[in-house]
Image (cartoon, rainbow over all chains, first blue to last red; front, side):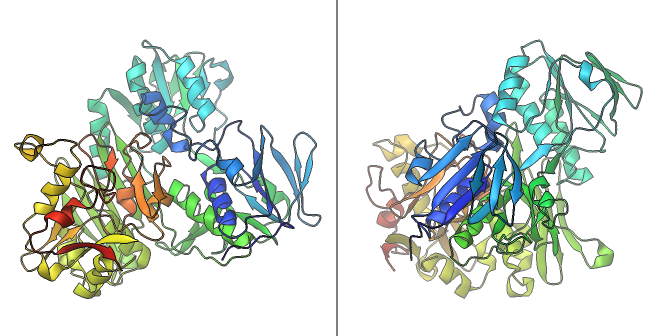
Length: 421
Length: 142
């Protein structure tokens, strides 16, 4: 049931996907309260993970808008572009902005995202052309910095660094990616899977320097710990990200790596919610709080917060890490968590030259998976992790071979394909 | 709203629905020209084992995970029908990662396509249903 409460003043700090979801959540309950969005970036909400596809020419700035151009207008939002929130006064319920403006809120949603983490490299200031790869402005900076002769050094072989490599591969002369870790995508892949992905990227012309890190920069040269030297024209820093927790921390809210939230997306401070890459909620596959900086999670959290801010009742207690990512047409998907054998973790594996499948399970539930090269119908596995489907209630041997609802009971299938879901 | 439902006990496992789907969405007038000798990329597929078969296509869920998870904002619901804007999709397959029904698969180009109930192609209503020889797939209100 929709209601209207013109007395409510919703304020959202941030203007990414989590913020857009929060707006949609609020408006699913309350069509009247005012919504103010504080947007550091001077852009309408766009699909952040698409910046590499923008450089690759697979999308453009118009198509990569997350919602239609009239989104804010239709939802009765005022957006303060190019403004940064600098302080939350939780007692007076006010947010101060960098231009001196102070705005009142009745319910506040912090969706401040994350910032690139850049260690204090010696000589970084001598590098002329450098950028991170997080925002649309970063993508513009990078596009302007490179030409077909450019030698690009990307520091960081994680999701951001490798998507960047894919995005610019056709525009530059050469790409070298270095990482302190001994493998690519170390946050989601094990050594075996990472090896497969790395060889695919190498076959497309990307070079790697792994288990190595930059000791210092000198203008256009990186001196590595290993003693190697890398000449470059353009430097991309994709080492990692840090959740933007400062506003809530300074206001006295509970923070850890991210802003601590409960299953209603509430922080420890009254009437303040936190969602998206800045928040730390429960990862049910691991049974512990984690920052899950993933777009789907940002939406689920944002919408949940919005509904609750507007007086509805919603919980989001199904968060798990999950990634679907591809490089030059080679796809992989990972979800959930794996546990060590001594903690009761078991694994089912299928490995050949072109594909890897690993299913992680424990205590009669699937806890995670890693699929490289073959990803059909993976959502069936993902749902089993999310719903903690007892393996004893399904034909797990059939599921090991391939994800299929044929492994479920006839009654379950009748609900899935014969009912309204 | 009307949706596509399957009765697995009636399914013969003939795969005709896959061919009818691929043809209905090919934009061509002749089935032979459209499909002969080519790999098909239907938006419905038959699953099962030696005992049971059934066709799987988009459930047009009440609260679709794919819409919320799409990194390109390319999936939306229009009058109850879950649709993908192929102009916005970049083929990341996150929707495949989250669909609990295993109902989604990309097109030949890698960009997503999905069952949109044939409402906007020349068929006008689901081709899989029209062509099912044993009425194992139906299009109705439930």
